[in-house]
Length: 468
Image (cartoon, rainbow, N blue to C red; front, side, top):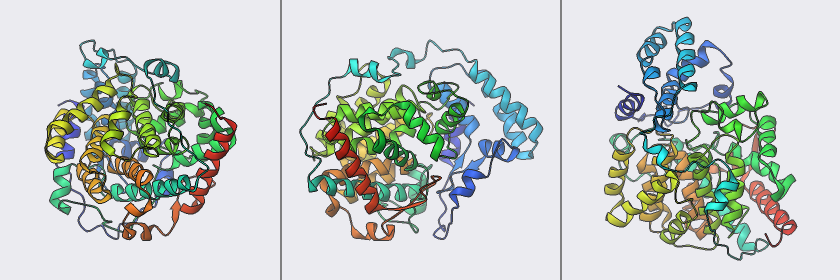
């Protein structure tokens, strides 16, 4: 079997826990438990997602990710079985050696020129992207009370989406339904904001408050080093690179097997919120942020979500919104082809489930954290949700995969567009106006203060940069 088949088998047989209402997660313990140790290595081979307990096999996923990026990885795949056996036996000597051999093979892997990946242009910088896209621009008054209300609704909806998705991330639609049934739109247990998804946005906001639209990727990288102890997949590799003095954009590319994964896509609503009605500027900030840890489709995914949020301040119809955001992607990129495919599904199928079934089949051998299938899930949820918060929530949670990283931006977009009244108070109250973080210096903040900081930072930056 190849890496994608292994991952597909695990996903097809993974069921969420039914009785997990009292499931407690100590995120800091999870972050801090592994240094360069046997236990950390074992976790990279066989572990579970802290929030949902879905299975994770990061080393094998790295092989899968490189195959998805058009590399020949057959030799690395031959070491999967020996590695799993060593992990099962906790033969750490063998596991260390096998893992090193796998990464060595990935680092030396040659492009498979027959791969469809190379039919598309690879994008690695804002300069290249800007030349390929014509962005619309709208007038929006960020000094108005309406702006503050939209930002509050956006942040609140995003935190709700993250909490809802954390319950079920890493599972398939079929297996979620086996345990929980359909139409998940309420909390399955006490909601928590204590995860890594919002961490990167808060760091960006802190840096943006100081630098405004003059912000650079290196500024953002410095914020990461100051505030973030550890990461996962692409972000972890980026942090390791940064600590070795490898600065962006190389930090997102050098030996970064996961550079097309969802990390940037999950963390760019903030760029749209500080650029209301200005999708070009939102895209620019998202790319500057994105290249710290990702490249090509990874940064385009982040750009897409930033554009969606920016446009949500000036457009309410989600079908129109998604279509216009899609037009802001470089047309010769593979990411744009994925969004185009998603829109075709939506236009040709009467219901979201039939559209999603085809998408699941198409992206069967992509990891559940990869940007592509999750981007399709976002488009499907926004399209078939018909501008309704509950319906959209049910769809995006029902798609499964990296559900916290998709539900958060999707619901943020609806919140920005329609305001706080679109959200059921039963979803708002349990948040207790509180955001718990894994940042070094900002452990607990209120949602209200987060909104105030966002509005103030956006207003200050806009004042200094009129006429952009």
